Length: 529
Image (cartoon, rainbow, N blue to C red):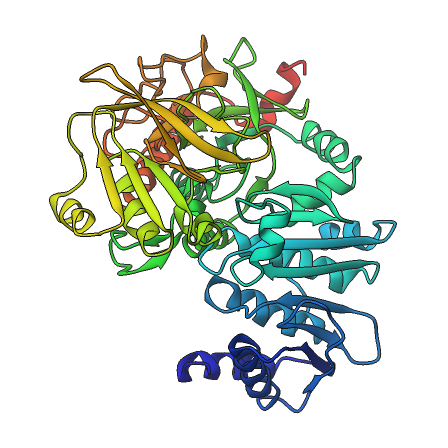
């Protein structure tokens, strides 16, 4: 069932079990049930602390529980957690078997303190790189608090449930039968939604922090590189980020990061996080910047957060990255995650056998259309320009596919729906000015990136495209404020370029610091918060 190398890795991990666990399956006569039974039998044979039994005590089939023997601590999977979810399975086996989590103890205690019966259901797809974070966080919560239950459901295997609940994006999470949230979520974010006082406590703790020498705003490749370079100078360094890893977490395959022939976004994001944590860096996650206040007589720049807290620093490095650009047409916001989506790898399997459109004819759009053509019934690619902009090799592949139509000079004008899900779209032919309608079930938007800089309007100089204007040292128009990565005017938005720009900005900030007088701790008295 498992490849030899993968089986060897799992067997080695299972040596860390300290408590006995049992795998309990519910199966039917289908091929997927046979496949699951084979997998569970193979896992049970790897350790004398693991047993397997078929009980058929769950209505979802194929499914299974990973249960700590003699307790009610368990996690459940409906489907076969391979692909991106194999790591979730491995962690579930370890943690149910007594292996401790590496999450901060304060977060784990917050989970133990949650009240009430919480029953979570997460719909995932095996090709989704965002789903494992959510599945693993909820599985850990089950292990820490027996009142919490969770089942991770492969949407491709349980299509009737997906259709019945109109799940059109993954991960989608239900709590006690009601929609809880969708999209990537960390353990911190999930706790924040359940423990309403968590955000206020975090804001209060942030408000009490002493000023930093360098404060990095953003945790993508640029922010991580900036934090590492700053910390290595022995100065007080902090990172405040909405999610550490940034846009790279949404990237599927990375094959051009020099010295790393192949990796995937979540793996690179975890590596960035781990590298930064090797240094004395204060990381403040799940925090979004709201306002930048340039230095006054006290010599400190202030960053106000949406949570109400604020941070002070002698220098600031802005590395807030970019996000997927929206079409900004009627219906797009209303039907987001109800047919309008931005991740073909994650959500593509949910549209199996359906008709979809891809908006955008660059490399991302054409690659998305090629990938989707192998899953869905039909793909229509709409490009605003008079010709596709993707690499010629991609265009040749796209044109060879029998279930793909290409429409150029097309301006999408509206997303159509029935109040619950997407039913089609309208577009205007820019050559003839005629209007057209496409009946379909999914729309994948792939039209580039938009810098996350709205909160800086009127503070630092921005280009007409909203990018932060920087010089060759990463310096912005505001003294002591530097910037790096996809949010800046630096051309060619690439991971390796962002990382290099982060290093440049950190060195620029350090040069600024050594040319100013007092260290941050001596400046506290001069500042009135």
